[in-house]
Image (cartoon, rainbow, N blue to C red; front, top):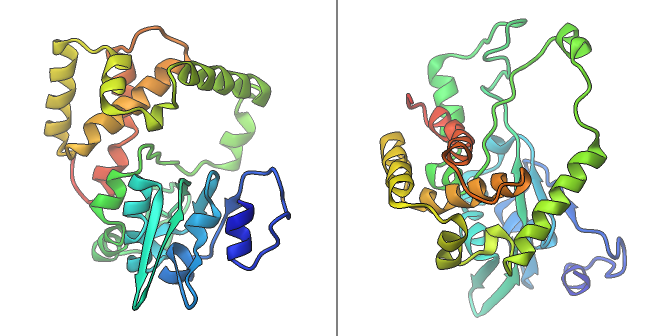
Length: 258
């Protein structure tokens, strides 16, 4: 990270030893997000290397900037080519994004009526392309809750308990040789140990839901992580169902029924 920060004109020792958490504004240009300029300098995705890139108001980012995330999310590097110049920067970031359900933000809120037309909602959601959504493994819809509901909620698990569960799951993955997100396909299949019945069921479910071929192994990685968090020695259909459930927002944002 010191080399990346230095290349970007930032202090190489500032925040030393702390994983980056980058939160660019939705008005950020494609060059600032992906990288570019003259001379070529890293963008936000490289500044988030081995850390988190948080994009709030995701549909408000320009389309070219969002589409530029696709290859780095797959390859963990970004290649930038300009006239007579070329650079390859690291970009192994974790993308976390947030968006409203509609332009006014009140769709589905029982307390305030949505003012958006159907066409406005469709245009808003269409700003997030299917290929980009396909690369987001956990898609969670958060329903607005009243203050009374929040006040009545019982305390959940303590953060220390959750943290230890995550540490334990990570140790299980390290014991396999690499984290689930980086498992090669043969190693992933071996770790999941699905029989033909479960493999065919998952493939049929993905086809019925209209998901891409890429989704198959992405669902497996999430399901394996769910099993690691329990922990469970065997991947079950319940784990697969939960992993599939985290992709339902994909269909919602594309305006399709499921």
